[in-house]
Image (cartoon, rainbow, N blue to C red):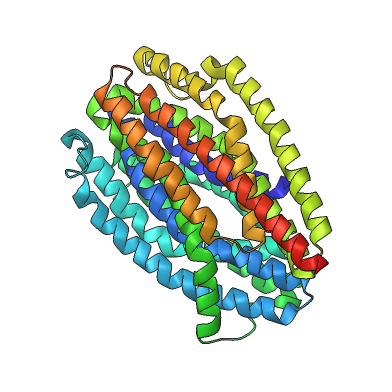
Length: 434
């Protein structure tokens, strides 16, 4: 989990750097980034989430001692990732034209729109990097991805400065410049990881770049059948958080800026249970391939117990240091006051969030992805979203309404995912005994 955690923090840190740097420009720039990121993140996670299928498939092949399948799975995953990345990039070129339909204030359109146009060019790199990352982590080599992600943090800061403030022929684009910087960075990360895998000895037994391979319809179907529900499940969960900025946009840029700060803080901390879930997917997937169901259940219980401890530590951290953490983002008094208040709602859902994402990670390792997809859609979009919209726009509680909706959705998802995990374990136990 540790290298994966560092990787997740590093990749989440890219958005953190964008938010902090935009926040020091103006509340308008911060609000524009909030809207742009609110549309980009769900699209990015939907398509890169599909590529998470690489992890359980490679882990299963690794556990079943069939290394010859690993290279084939990875090559086929790269084909899928390339096509999906191009589609995602085209989607992001269209999204700026939907801003008026979404009720986004006109003052935010230019910068949010340019951010989306620019960052779309990096989407093929995002999805292909996700495929290579899943391969590397599933065969027990998470550290190269970690190192590359840490290097990206260092590179992003000067790239942001160049496009935000201008240099030579490059004009000053303000917060919208973050889109260009991030797209360039994604391509640099992909090239670096691909070159490392090509040349490092640890990958030679399962080398995905040893030869060219056409698209195989069998693996294409397997990757999409497993990955598409994963991508949708992640999309349903993350988009409910990201689109909250759009729901709140009629309440003014101060409210949106405060909400974006609170979301950014919780997004960084969410990387802890998310990393645990990825580690659980790998370990559960390996034991699932070995058909060692007893060890698989032990890993599941250990993961849930670890998630509980980490969530309690996160709750204490948020409660004690909420003022100091918000101060890192902004010095605006009104924005600070609202953001500190919203962070308290994040404290309330940490346990449910840790349990539901850990359960989802275990289910992915067992290659159960369709059930979790329907559960997340029900919890977040059928229940949480309408509750959040109604409370925030049609009652006096304002932005807190969105966060109450999030708490309701996470609680329902937690109960249903844990229940499904329990039933899957019982089913495997019965099949083994018979």
